[in-house]
Image: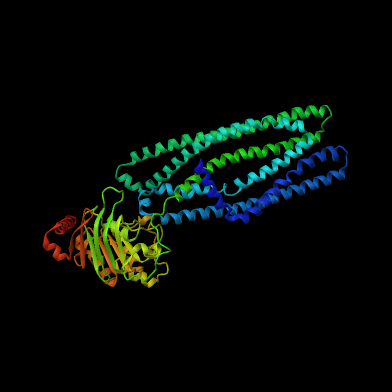
Length: 581
């Protein structure tokens, strides 16, 4: 409860960022609510005064005034609703941008554990759910209270005893509302959890239908989805029943109150202590007194729903930003000399992934890192990009500790080409421009020629404007890797890391592409993380990793002649290449 209040306070600070807009919108909302106070009074005068007195002129005047007030009331409501709509949409946009920016700040630990479907639910469902809470839901309470207070004064003036009868059943409404609110909040939180799991399942299922069929996993996946669907169905029906029952109970109490007003009020009309116009006006005022009460019942229900989403959003935003920079960080020109000095690293504080690592990567040289899967090769590039920080030891670029660099600046000047390059559902040319939007057409053509992709692109109907599908699904593994290499060429940085970047290519294409890229990028620091060792025989330095330790280092011929662990890996790689050919 304490954390929920804290989150609501934080949310209100975001809401009041638009305080000028809120002031104007609230003004028109209050004008709309205030104008309603006069309409029942005019009704009473039309019946008891103009109609009973048979004054047609007075009736026309009262009808005209009634229409004018109704126009003013609805006009103010339109303006208020429009302004709150603008505030709500801007609020949602700001909130989504805040979430996305925070997502970029979070460390590799968070991203390795994160489930994409849950994040999508927060960005789509939860931010949309708080839109009403950020606008009318909060400020309409003020309007409804002011309206109810005004109605109360009129009712007290008209018939105090009838007012007492009107308020007789309202405590029952408050008691039932409290009970419904608690149950709705609990069930809504459960439903939100299942909705998050649904998004996670869909995120896995939709892009992988073909893979699931190939693995004969259709029955397993359908059973998994159906189990969650059934839980969502059960909770959805239960929530809808609670919502409907809540509103129905409030409506029933309102109907009973109306019946009591007409019963006792009718008796007073018959006995001559109340006019017909007075009874009609009293009933209209009573309905508008009960209306805000019922409205606040509905607002409370929506509030409980929205607070589930508010808590989820701030639970994410409270994720600690572990990778920090000191006072904005340094932004010097990077030459590209990299050094790992006695670096230790572990993911889960158990078995270390890297132990006492000492490495040197020099500008103008090709440095290779080899080892079996799980030896810690790819972890080195993640540490250099500061997705994680070492548990012990230091990493230097040009003699400066990487923690002293501006984080955005550091990542901007390091290019990583991974085994599974990222591609979005767009054209070839737009995917090539991902790192460098202002690249020239002739440079794009030159880049794809260097990776042997130009001829293939020109055979496509739309050539460079061909859509490649989600994550490049319309391209083969080798074509995606060559496209990723071309993209790296178009954004040359002082440090370039090739992390199994050619593993899906045949050996002839791989050799040609690597030779061309190494020649083009010869004045930069090139780090090659390789499993297929035939690609790194020309490297200036090779570091051999085993279980997180550097066990051998040197040039290819020297390591090969030692007939140690590197020799074993090289022969294994060679035999694998022969078996595939």
